[in-house]
Image 1 (tube, rainbow, N blue to C red):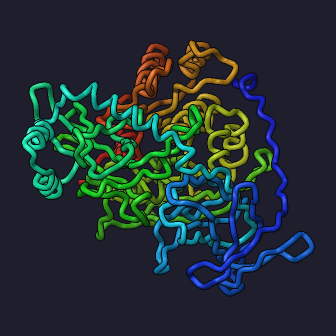
Image 2 (cartoon, rainbow, N blue to C red):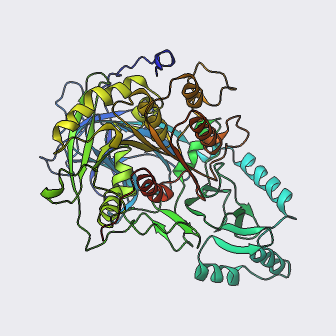
Image 3 (cartoon, rainbow, N blue to C red):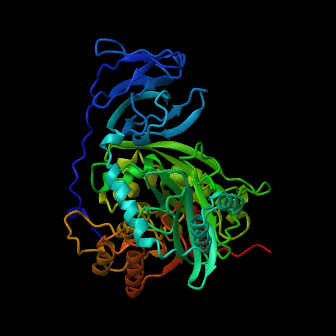
Length: 573
């Protein structure tokens, strides 16, 4: 299978420009650098020097060496601020620090490469702090004031939304609240009940299970990020009250995570730039009782979750004290072909030496290493599944992304990246393994773009990867030179090529439909089509749909389902 004609990207590394930046004294009493649009900052952090001795530098001076840099970002409340930190192979963290010296928001969390940040200014006296080691460049790309945001258009949209839906309220509890408001009563009793019950509200009505998301406050707008929709649906304001709501009919096995996004910036832009502004304000629902993940450092990195009673149980997600723990080891993998370096982490299962020659051992390669190690907790999942005898011993290779741009460039059906994995990474991994694991017991796995990559790489290199786990694979993707009507690139390639010895586990969420008026079939539709094509070609293809969306919260359980489906193990008596 070849994709060469679809990839003509010319990669280049832009040179850094060394600029002078000014300093000021903040309310914290320490000298801080000043970051403004059009004035990038460049420097170097080192663990060898004291923390707050910050000095600017010019081209004629030596580079500063500090392990943290305090930054003042001139702003007005409500400003939309976005930009990036580029630290190459160096790991950096950037936090917003309040007057007490505590983290109020984490913008970048121990990441390398080019990492973007999004924020809306709440307290302009707060400082931003970059910490880590090595060279960096910080660029503030946009500062959009409230006056420049489309506030009038935002208000008109929500007034129109309220008008259209005022007679079609689905939630019995919201309907009862509307009647109370008409009698001149307040919302206090309603919200006292909500605080006790938790959100979202779950009600049974004649048409099914109703899930209603709620928010309270005087906002310009409120949107839902995640949940049973891909469209960043707007919550509707109930009359002139402080109550906002959005209801969905959902299956009884629904399990998902979501965030509430108040006062989403309405930018004078279009397309993706306007859509991603929601990242600046999306945060945990304060009335939800099930925040996740537990490692989240602030409300912006925390998601709220809901799991209905018929959702998959997934007993292997939590750490079990008595379960033997596998070991993690990490090394740097540099590819001259890709011109980048990334972390590769190997999980070795907790088995004794007598089991190292087991002929049923499995080797798993999986993308998005940080998310699957930290957020999903895949090492813990493997510990539990192996100890319970649900799967044979699995060695896992977690493949990191150098940065977000590299992920978007490398994972979508990129033959250069596929060949680097097959010809450069795999030989290095094989040298480190205590046993040889054949290709028919080797899996390549991922979610979203990672599912697309796993599928196309296995089809290109079936002599190395004999199995695929694709979770919510982005099979809507197509090369730029294909028309909008060509919706099934991977399926079309499968039809044209000879069958190869690869087995598949594919999954999709029932909420992963196309966004808005998109001509795409979305993740759900394209996964169904690929399943049909694979089966028609005679492939072994396991397929499962879940009451979920595009969501690591559900992928935690699905990765276990995929492993069990492809490599079930007889439990020891």
